[in-house]
Length: 362
Ligand SMILES: Cc1ncc(COP(=O)(O)O)c(C=O)c1O
Image (cartoon, rainbow, N blue to C red):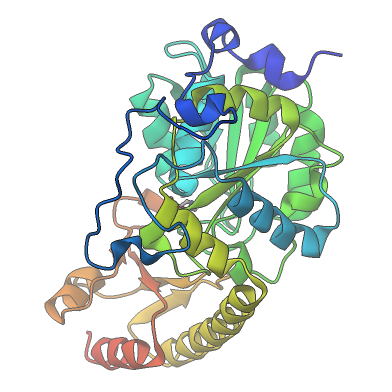
């Protein structure tokens, strides 16, 4: 039976022969003279002391060890997953690749549910793909009925759970409802960048039943490794066969792959879990303290490493924080969040300083 991915993929991608980089072609031999690399290894200070020894060679086409380590981390919670995984330059590259792989510029449409992460629409815009916006309900949950109406004419549905900037998780019952409704029409992408901070299940366990579900993850948030640009795309073999046609020849630099592998080791995971628990404690403490301030109208509950706050001030709370040297994220551009500010949870000291500053806001 033809998979949904092969039904949706534009003809140009269907016909595309992946770029045959030297590493992708592989081979066995003792002299590697096929990639125009330098054979000699210059020493730049202590730069070449990593486990990789030297950086004169191109990296793996896709670093298999890192991907496998991340899959193992996922499967510790879900059990065996019937999917493939690729390591990419952050979750952002995964979003971009999905749009470029499955959408035909000028023709196709994606669905997003604002307020949500801005890159879905940006990637669609940059590729002349239409974005259909079905706003979240007042509860910040999905308007399932409206989304269902758009499914037959949409290639990708982007969901973000927990959602940025609202901070809440999407109800699993709605996700399942949409997965059932989209089986023949739309690939469902769930961006789980903040999943480690959530008390709810990841959607990964649904992948075995719904092969048109795609999950995006990252090391930028709970793992604290935004600088190495490392994210993951998990999808069924058919989706992945097309994504891999478009992926850059060498997306992941060796130093990034090495750091990611350390973070995904047993010790690395332990550290990440401990830091996540600590951060959640600071987040919940900060939220409780904020409730005591009269300038704050509402604090949205958060399953992320940030808190969305609605203010009832006459002046801009964002500008006030800037004047205090505290850079938060203004939400004034979102009609339903125009008096809101999103504050990332930092160290306890940073949150005490922010709290003290907010006490003087009026
Ligand atoms: C929901 C969401 N997805 C993806 C990203 C980007 O992640 P990465 O750093 O892995 O590209 C962000 C960054 O803020 C985000 O909020």
